[in-house]
Image (cartoon, rainbow, N blue to C red; front, side, top):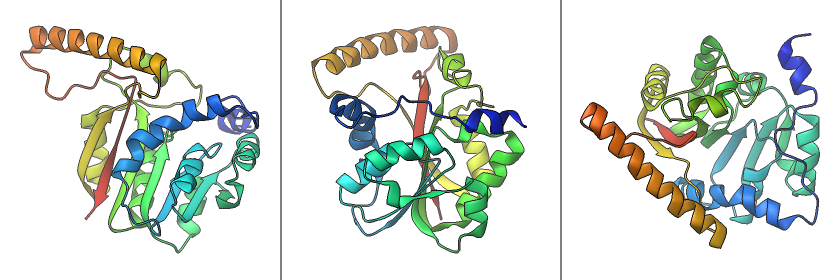
Length: 240
């Protein structure tokens, strides 16, 4: 048995969602609501595919926002049980992402992959991006989130999960997206999202330390050049 088969047979990175735990649900969906929704097309009839959808938190956010044509793909049995609690199980296909992309004849306006790219070796990753590109409509976008290799705590998310193979920088992501035919790449930090008093305090503290780290970089390199310090980064790339 490969290490992937052994780990993924009982894979669940977040604790399962108790039906009444609305506070936890808000804590794991607020980032999608505040950040990701604003880069998506406003047309609620577009086709959206999420690869490695896990427990279905983003599908839940999309459904609540009124998007109708949703598809998620994931292998994990335990995570699929959580998606049932969230009311999005009917959108989810239990399959390997490579198998799904190779065998579907559908194309999508938006394809998302949150916390997925880091699970593949380099050759696998380039093959995956080629498949994603082929399943996007012209002008469609690929939205992602992944560990940030240039941050001061780069190793934390890189080695958080035994199945992680790689971390990325803005430059390395630009390289692989360009190699797979994408253009117009945009990258953003994954900052604390304000949705209450505690999160506001976290955001203020973060902003202070961010400025201090930028000051350090200016002293060392003479410039910041769009440096992202957060442990994860996210963004999107377009098929043109």
